[in-house]
Amino acid sequence: MPELKTVLEAAYNMPDSLRSCSNFVWHVIQAYVPDQPYMVANDLVKFLARSADWEELDANDSRTMADLAKAGAVVVGGSEDHPNGHVLVVYPGDVKESGGYAYSSNGKTLIMRSHGLYARSMSRALGSWPGAKSDGDKTVWDAWAGPKFSKVRFWVLKSTKPPK
Image 1 (spheres, rainbow, N blue to C red):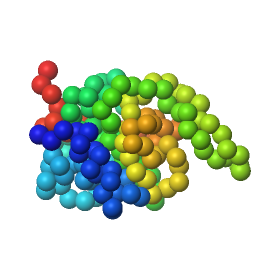
Image 2: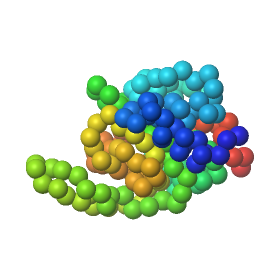
Image 3: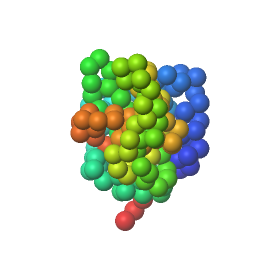
Image 4: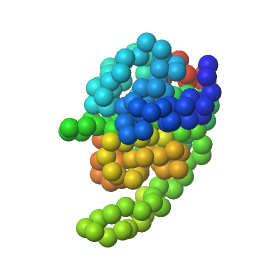
């Protein structure tokens, strides 16, 4: 099985991943499931929710998600939204404080405060929200940064999950 960090870095640098969360996550999944078809974020979230190959995780259990990723398991998080949803992959590493990055609001540059400890993420994004773009430096919470996080769901690819 390929090493997760190597797969993440390769997918992160693919030309079609530069501005698209869906392309990035697709490249990661394809390293483990070669026949995985490409899907935009909203469709991928629906697919993961009904696939027998993926197991849903507790979205509030960042330590378990981080531990699974550190063990090499592919953990994907996502939410549906109109017109585009967002998807990401949990990055192997310890949980960390969310926030700490600059964002703009009403013409002012602010620093996002921490909202707790969360698993690290790796993602690209079509939009301009700085928390949605991460090479492991931000958390899964940062991608949605607020009430939208309550709609995020996470799944682990069963074939990459370490035995208990």
